Image 1 (cartoon, rainbow, N blue to C red):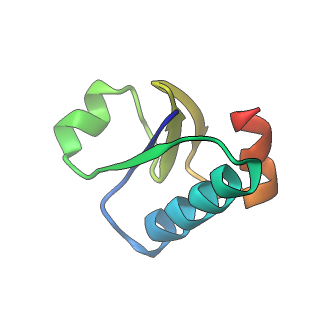
Image 2: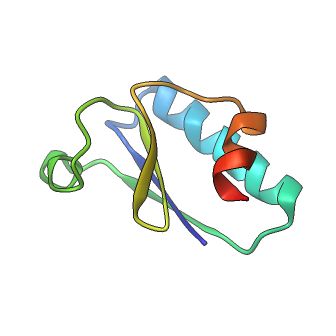
Length: 76
């Protein structure tokens, strides 16, 4: 499973990455995390508000930092 964190690398982006990693570990899924900070790549992905989370190329959260519990639902 590929998890992508879109954002500038700010505190919220880092928190989103931590929550995503925690959720994936709790579910026991095999995953990789990629942090996308290039503004052109963020725009190309269709992200309008950061931070954003994509799971296997699909944006599932944008402009917010969902909890690890909520992210578990995106990964299931």
